[in-house]
Amino acid sequence: MTTILTTGQVTGLTAQAAAAANYPSLDNTGALLPDWYINDNGAAVYAGADVATRGVGIYGQTPANLVLVGLLKSAALSLITSPSMTIIVLNTPAVWTGVYNINSLTDYLNAPGLQNQVQLALYEGAYQGLIDSGVLTGNEEDRYIATFLQPAVRYGVDNVVSWIEGTIDQDTGAAIEIAARQGQYAIDFVNTYSADLSVAPAPASSNNTVVRTQVDQAVTDVINNPKIPTIEYANTTAITADIAAAASAANLVANISNVVITVTPSNPDDGTFRFAPGSTRG
Image 1 (cartoon, rainbow, N blue to C red):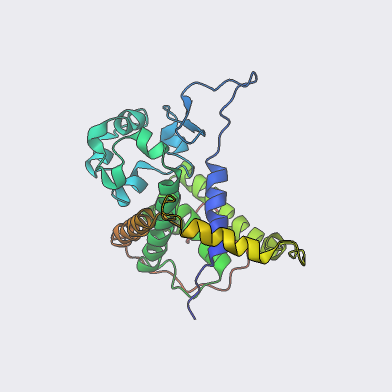
Image 2: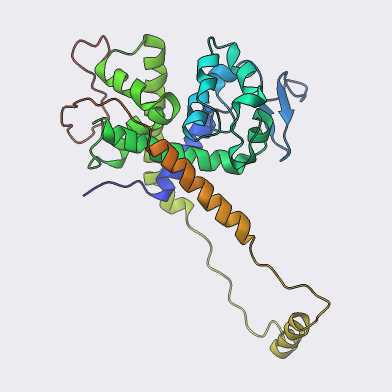
């Protein structure tokens, strides 16, 4: 039976990604640190040179991530010839595709909802990439899947494959291992505490607290009053656009080809990392 992560587990992974990408925005006096500003939603966001290592926005997404979901033009990656060029390129309007009305880094930092949709699309695409590359079969336990899925979203499927093979550089390998353990922690937390966190108090009972006939008459008067505009219960246009955007982003990511490798069948995950023969780690 194919393992599918639950909504709660995916939420746990995204929360862990956000926590890993969180940096202090204020100094000891309570003033914003350099390169931070308050976006349109009242949140402090970072737009400085360290974006090369911190990533973009809530989840620390990379330029490669933004290319995968169609927000950045693929040529943008070739322009980032050094870490110091990352913020320069991201601040160049010409590298943005205009998809979802995002035409600049500021636009994207002002759109936390879209950042969340992009992160979910990246999880979907990375999962499929891990399947295609042979790292996963789809029959593994949730904790095992998260071990590879969390770093694959942040550092790419190909780098995770190199990590497994023991051919990744030391710094990237160490970062991938940290993300892998964070993925495990997120699943452990959700599996252990989700039931407790979902508990809500029972609604209080009540009797004869309102005069029903008066309420019914008031509602009727409002509904039938021509001076009161028709109530719109939801922004259906925006909801439809959000659904289409998420589906489009997931499709873009899922169609990215990945390197194919052969992986030895795994035992049930016991929490121990195993590396390829010849690796200096383990």
